[in-house]
Image 1 (tube, rainbow over the protein chains, first blue to last red):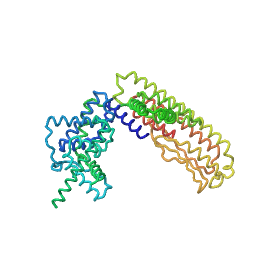
Image 2 (cartoon, each protein chain N blue to C red):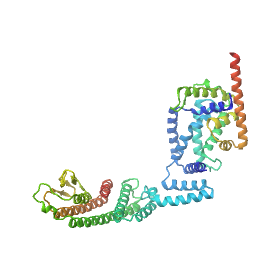
Image 3 (tube, rainbow over the protein chains, first blue to last red):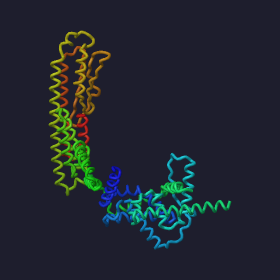
Length: 199
Length: 313
């Protein structure tokens, strides 16, 4: 209970400070969320350069939004960032056309794989391979499945947050996640089967 | 592949992050953009109000709310001084700082400790006022009223320091005189001819205790009392550095008190003379501070105030 109250307190405190145009609070919020928002955008649109531009735009838009609006529509600041990110991506699709998202591995992307130093060489190799696999298969999923997987398993948001961001109920989100996982799993199984047949 | 393995693979994707170069450059650009749009730093009071409101909203359960209330009540009575100690004279919380300091003084029962604490608080107030007035952004014609008020406050704080130091010193003088007359018998007179004074070890300890409380510091002059109880029972007063012109004129203090064959009256007299010198030096220091403040040499005044604090500590 106390950690829940502490979390609520911290979120409220950050939002209230931001309403007063507190630069320090927004800088802290930026540092905490920039990597998550980048990952969300990157896995959704599949292009590193565009993902970086959109990420920058998301934070600036959120800052402007906070100054001019009440924040009752977002329970937490993090939810607000994701909502603005989703809307910015929709605007991006409108301007540039949705296009076909090519496999992410085909692009020379500038990103780091930030691995903890404690991890062994083998473990680091496994992680890199997993990332490559996800990058290859995620674009093949439906948009809402992809979004659900990115938020739940990659950025590790909880069901309540995802429900707040997407405007759906928790039950719907649970079902959506289950279906998304099933779809991804079947893609991977098909892939493995076709590889085995070739061999 | 089972679902658990799949989820593990998906979790590993969280290790992917944008390159550090972009993160750094983007952060700097972003900070510039929000600064141009009117971002600012909140004051201590504003942050305190926000924290209080946020906590009130977060703790909606009645039991938790009452626990928090009791905790805040307890913490503020114990820690209010630490919470408000950074408030500056032009802050809204300054009055809270003054009140919490008064509350803390009332919890100290020893008179000497209370006076020392009062001096410490008053010198800190004086330092803060000087720092504020040394700031050209604050010390302007527009703020003349506030500047004049702060100058008055400064003078009041210095008066407090002066009075408390005088009180502390008069207490110490009484102690020394008592010790000098009661405990120093004729032991040294009886053993006059010998190469070493043979005061008792308990007397040495008392001399050491009293004399070590009277550490006199002025420019280039220091008197130290060293006890050499192990080798001999000799107690010596030695000048470490002599002579330097001060801004108020040349002050020379040359004292060599050889305890071999010295009488108890001479020791007590020397200690009283030390106390007199202490008093003169402290008064001189306080006058210097006043003069520097009036001459608007705030940084120099702050340095002198540090010396007062060091003397007290």
